[in-house]
Image (cartoon, rainbow, N blue to C red):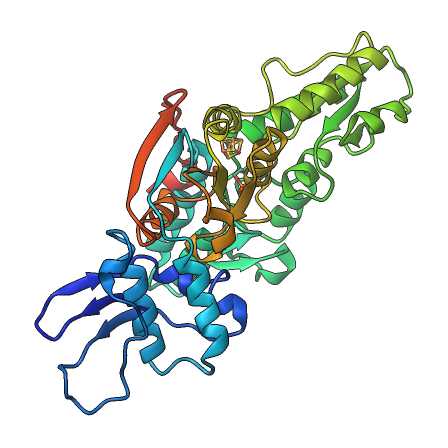
Length: 410
Ligand code: 0CH
Ligand code: SF4
């Protein structure tokens, strides 16, 4: 699949839609092995099996030509095994060629905690480069496949549990936090720990300890199995119960209904969590909550921004990985508001039928999805016809977190 076509006379035609035609909604999704890269056209008359399969470039709107050329280049690159199904893939994308508006939600993409966590690993990779000391990271540093792959390519070694890390090695704890039990194991094993837990997650851990210490049952609102929830539950395991829905609240049993507090995961949906809190307040009228909301500023801002955009969009694309709680919540939020929404790792996940009839595509990214991936989506859509990009900003973020002392030290 051509990312650009270099003509014999030297002009270059960019083919920004290449990731779309090659990806899950294109060739890869139809069982083909698709590669992307520049394609060079040979001068007319050169012996070659190259041929263009397309209609004339003028048959599609400006910008759409690139799709057709990309299709032609693809068919000519010798990567195709069959004619019929390939033509169907191309046709599906050509039907999606039209002018459209992309409405960007702002804030979107990386939050201060994720920025810091990525910088922690990057700084350690530089520090230990060439020393023979690998930098281990327990769990995904943040829940984004591209971030993890990028750090892996730079040398980071991701592990699921500490037993995969040799004694005395350098290990980073992810942004989602760990339980005290994990810290104790690391200390027993003499591991050199660098903690990239977001300070706003650390705040929730401190509340869990404080609430449990005053004799309360701590009700943690969150998703079972999520790393952040496992870490927070570990702070006061005998005194903490997990609830996910108002129905869970109805069946909750606590030793003393007059001594109950609640906390939440930082990346939940604001509206759903409000329902659970309201059910808790009805059931336990004296319940106490955190000093300030546990759902963090970044989660809150991304949800408000998307709500403003989704109401004006025909479809919403959320850039983020499937295991990213805050990203999944964004897609669900748009759907609850009545706008179809899809979670994508990158432009290659987009399906033609999602956007074929969309005048306005709402676009956002979860707190762990870098802005470059959003740029990639906008560029790819630009290969399907002229795109007008507008941004809807609901607030401006200024939060930053300093690096942990162990990283700043040298
Ligand atoms: O949204 P979750 O918590 O799944 O995590 P993420 O996608 O890595 O985003 C950053 C949040 C990290 C901890 O709050
Ligand atoms: Fe911290 Fe919020 Fe980002 Fe999580 S989403 S890392 S709590 S700022």
